[in-house]
Image 1 (tube, rainbow, N blue to C red):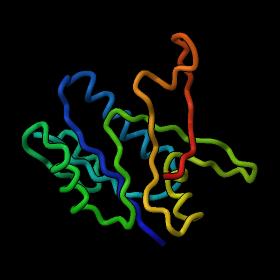
Image 2 (image 1 turned 180 degrees about the vertical axis):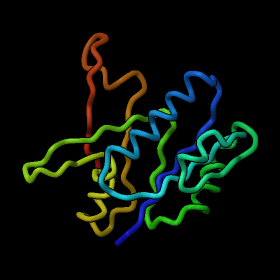
Image 3 (image 1 turned 90 degrees about the horizontal axis):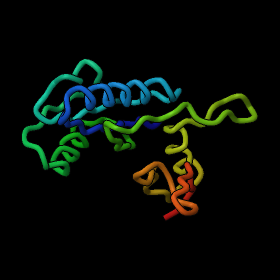
Length: 147
């Protein structure tokens, strides 16, 4: 059985809103999948979210996200690594005909099970809430892609 590490870089710039959003993002990760994973938090100049992490790395100096991600990857133990943001709120997912659910992590793992040569899967979103389909008409959109 493969293991998964989810990496979340965290910087709290606006303490009130950023703490609430980050807390919500972590809780959504933990409560919307049946797949067990290791949560690795790389927190810039803080330890506020250490109790919520399986692995916590305190990094110094803003603006060095590549360094923070590399440190988190080195500290992770998963066979697969997922990178998310501290402002990404995931949902439980779709109910399938067999009664199971296809959540965010299940959707990311599925291509590796289907395609032996799969090297990368990604959840992506467009800033502003979706793709514009008309004059100022936003629409939430999920697109399956193979790169």
